[in-house]
Length: 212
Image 1 (cartoon, rainbow, N blue to C red):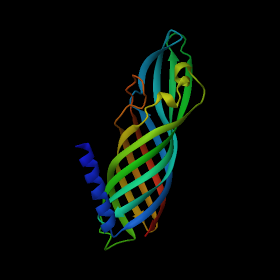
Image 2 (cartoon, rainbow, N blue to C red):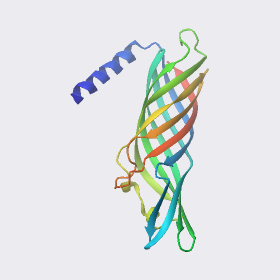
Image 3 (tube, rainbow, N blue to C red):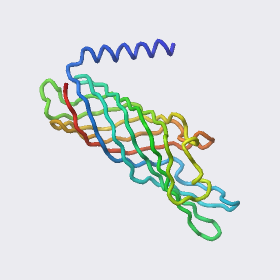
Image 4 (cartoon, helix red, strand yellow):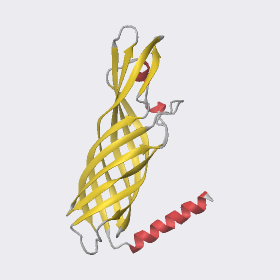
C-alpha cells in the first residue's frame, strides 16, 4: 500500500514537471526563531530542584529550491540552518541562575506545495503565493554556550534522527527577487529520549529566482 502511494506520488510529480510551463531555481537566506513546546518545567541538578524556562533565540538558514508549476506549484529543496534556544535553570534554594544557549546545526529537506494568487501567464513580474508542506530535519552538530549541568551534556546523538514539521506561509515574487514568511509546527519530538518536546519555528527568507 505504501509502495503504491509513493509510486503514485512520484508519477504525479514527474507529470507535473513534464507539463509545467513555469520553472525556476531559487537560492535564499534568512532568519528563524526556534521555540520548544516544553518551555517551562522543573528538573534536578545535583539533587537540587531547579525551575527551568526555555526561550527561542535568533538563528539563520540558507538553501536552494526548484519551483515548477503554473497557478499551482510544487517546490522541493534543501536547506542548511541553525536554531538556538536559551535555557535558564534557577536554583530553588539560592535563586542562582545557570544559563545555557544550545545551537543546533541542521540539514533539512523541505517539500512545499502552493498556489499563486495571480495567474503567472498574465503577470510574471509580481505575484503572491500561499504555501504549505512538510520539512524533515537532521541535527548534525550541537554547540553550547555556558553549560548548566545536564543541559550542557546534550549532543547530536541525543536528538531524533529525523525531526518532522508541518510548514505553511506566505510568499511574494517581485521580478527576480522573492520573500517568504512562514511557520513550522513540530510534528515529532526533537529529542531521541523520553522528552516529548517539539520545535516550532518562525522564519523569514529573501532570495533570488532564475526562471528557465
